[in-house]
Image (tube, rainbow, N blue to C red; front, side, top):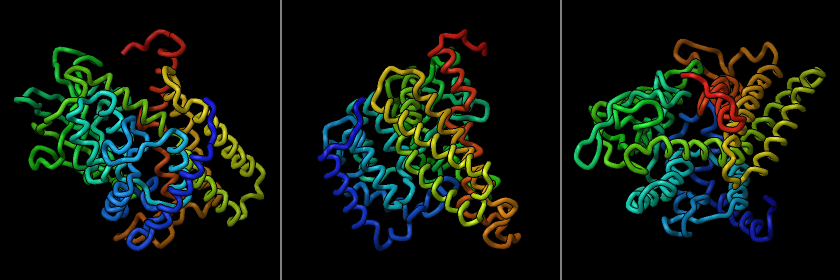
Amino acid sequence: MDFGFGRADEAFRGEAREWLEGHLVGPYAGLAGVGGPGSEHLGVAERREWERELGGGGWIGLGWECAEGAYGNRVGSLTRQVVWAEEYARAGAPGRVGHIGENLLAPTLIAYGDEAQRRRFLPAVARGEELWCQGYSEPDAGSDLAGLRTVAVRDGAGYRVSGQKIWTSLAREADWCFVLARTDPGERRHRGLSFLLVPMDQPGRVEVRPIRQMSGTAEFNEVFFDGALAPQVVGGEGAGWQVAMGLLARERGVSTLVQQIGFAAELAAVIAEAVRCGSLRDAVLREQLIGQWAELRVMRWNALRTLGAAGDAGAPSVAKLLWGGWHQRLGELAMRVRGAAAALGPVDWTARAPYELDALQRLFLFTRADTLYGGSDEIQRNIIAERVLGLPRLER
């Protein structure tokens, strides 16, 4: 596509910049940089209020393919979505706690849901009032999602869900969870699955347990469903795999360009640390930092090249492989520029607070998961091999 910013886009940029400058004040002034990799657990209550602030301004749902104002949101072209993301990052606005509902659930409902579901759920997401989490991965079905064991049985107009999900971001804060479950026990693998909407506030039926990480924080959770009511199914019973794959394509593809804006800020922080430590005198390290910068530029150009493209089965997997490995290498560089000092926390460790880490240390630990979550590198390569190159399918 011919990607560029026109006069209307630049006028929109000015509007976005002015709004952010006028609203990142008062109770929100201290949220700059809060909620990034490894710190999603910080300031959740304040960031939830910030979601409502964004919703009040109509800034949630710019990329939704619907009539402007239909659900209380603005609608923006692809270029305007990029403009908003750039200005949001430039302003140092906090990490979004509503991104799962806005960027994953809402486009899925627009593509596969019925009108009643869209009118029930999209306005609440657009106002920043309801938060969502994603119930896909399980202890024995992570990247191999088709092996999931969570089941759902009919109960009147809805379903009763039983099983376990894992690595569930924001499960403690979410109001709803979209859950992939098996509704036809006679089918195997990709068949017989359904995409269900489950309210999280079901005492005795839904239990959330935080997963303590090596960083000392709990960014993720495991969720246990014991006959939890799921009043809604999206796309019809048995269509869950199609719906789930449509959602994952958005997770790995459209959001990549926005993600790179944050990557650029992290790279700048690592370079600044290298300058402060004097490690830029190391020619090898200097070359590695230059390589990271060049690769990020290439990723941006590739994302722009594929932005809005349809029908390329391999594009989302290629994007995931590129950014997962790049981000992990950045985390390693964040420690390498410090040398032995990277092992020291910002304050002395104590039994009461043994995991005091700074932003670059959290970046390093968090990025260890980049080549696993959202579909491991091995799964992405299998997708490219089978669906793009036409190689024989892997026996499972």
